[in-house]
Amino acid sequence: MRITLNELKDLQPAVIELLEIISLEGQHYMARLHGPTGLKLLSDKAGKTRLFRSAWEIQDTLSDFAVQETQIVHPSAYHEMVGMAPSDIEPMRIQVQRQRS
Image (cartoon, rainbow, N blue to C red):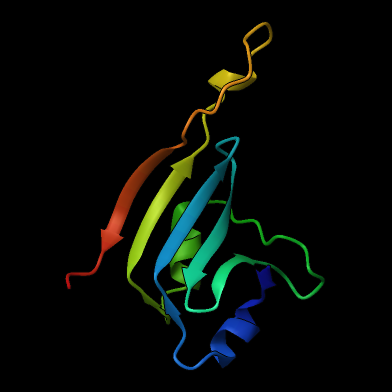
């Protein structure tokens, strides 16, 4: 599912349980939001994935919302190398922020 920033603002309360900042080739980032309404991908008004230039830009964009935990996720490129057998390799996750309970 997708959600725009305006749709997110309309949610009451707009709580993001987990913000995953997905690194794409190290040059672009996208925001995957986990919350009470399930998993959502932050998109623009046209329904296309909203891309950011940095993890900080995503955090600034979502600074008005209650974000309980933030992780930067780097998918592994090793399983895509030529000649390597396909395998399920978990992405590297870096916890950036977490609220205390």
